[in-house]
Image (cartoon, rainbow, N blue to C red; front, side):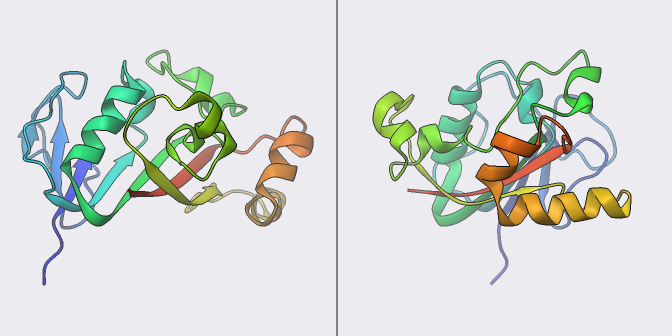
Length: 177
């Protein structure tokens, strides 16, 4: 059975086997659509995997986008979101970045989180199945060691170490509930 995969904000590096969506027609873009324009041109419960690789931080309404992602995700699907880490210098270099993310940014959508319980931003819910730093990014041996530690101790790294040695990117894996 072939998975239905959607890459939102694919640019020229579309996820293999995905339908690529971006706001400009170029190689790899299958559907031209401004991701700030809701709703997206897809039916409910369509995709097994949705990927957003460094695109969410450019959009106006994170909550609205997550509601759309939830709507077009199949039950049991997976959502992978890569975003700049809020302490990274790379998060601030790009003047088109509108949002920055911490390890708890998606806890607002996870009903098992005290953050969701207190501040629930939306009626849609996602289980945060994993949070990881610098997946697939290279770097020095020190950066790799810090990444390994950060991925084993996410909360400790963010609270006590990230200010001294900030990593670059977060990858969230979410399951729509």
